[in-house]
Amino acid sequence: MTVLTIEELAAALQPGQAIAGLDLGTKTIGLSMSDLGRRFSTPRPVIKREKFTIDAAVLLSFAEKEKVAAFIIGLPVNMDGSAGPRVQATRAFVRNMEQKTALPFVYWDERLSTVAAERALLEMDVSRAKRAERIDSAAASFILQGALDRLSLLGRTAPDDLDA
Image (cartoon, rainbow, N blue to C red):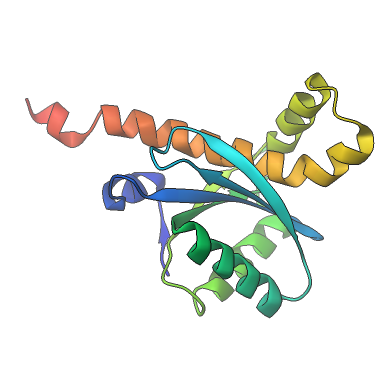
């Protein structure tokens, strides 16, 4: 497994490969999945966290079933850009995944993704109980959508276009 930048991932992906988004929480892992054209992110059911080996097995089973080519994982940096304990926990999770898979991970700044997800769920008039169930996957979807938008932009400004 490798940690890539979004630019490196853009160069490595083949057409028709889907990618997954992850919002790593202390109690759950929010999941989202792109379409094969990598235009849209769709929330998927959360993974209830247990211990790392179980979480990793469930995540990798999901990846195999969905034919995931890479993971975009939210990096929960502080609003001032500094790294706190949750950033360290996320990086440790990815380091531990290195032993389990060759799939690449891309860190994605997730500042305000949960706030955006909460607002979207409120606008859809989702009840408080349902919001609690769906917030992590909705946040994962926002994280993945940001990365998909960046990949789309990188695809439109490929180095081949700049050589002309």
